[in-house]
Image (cartoon, rainbow, N blue to C red; front, top):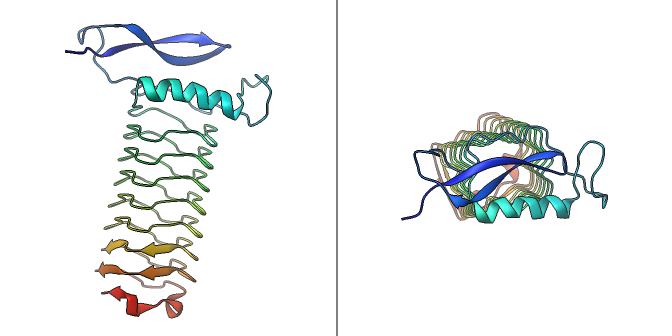
Length: 238
């Protein structure tokens, strides 16, 4: 039977970063999941080719390699704190990111597909072009985030708070957004093909140019929503 891995903090290029100890320890010595509650607050990763800047930034390739070392050896970051972290283009696909704090983080172009994001906090984050395909994000909070062009295909987002978001051209095809809140969100030209829309609140949302096809919606609130006249209601089952 395998034992939990002990986590130590070592100094890598003057930046503390959690790594795994190769020696397995007993559950009495270590009784929390790898990287549970670890702090990455305002950790900055540069896109330049410089090895390291005075702010301890890293190039995209360097952080991708560093994250991948953790990603594939540990696999989960329960309740870790990435507040205002620069995670542009990071590959965090297939990870357990339960209740992780991404508030204000820059996740442009990041890949979180197939990850567990239950209860995670993305309030005010930059999610433009991010991939959430087939992720489990039910109960997550993305209030006020910018997710223009993001991919939410087949994502589970039941009960998620998506209010006040910029979701221009976001793709929700085959996603389950049951009981999600999209109050005052910008959903212009968003795609909803085969999306499960039950009990969703679109109050005061802008749906101009949104593409709804082959969907079922029950108990959906469109009060004060914009752009309803242009929707093709014939393709919807209400």
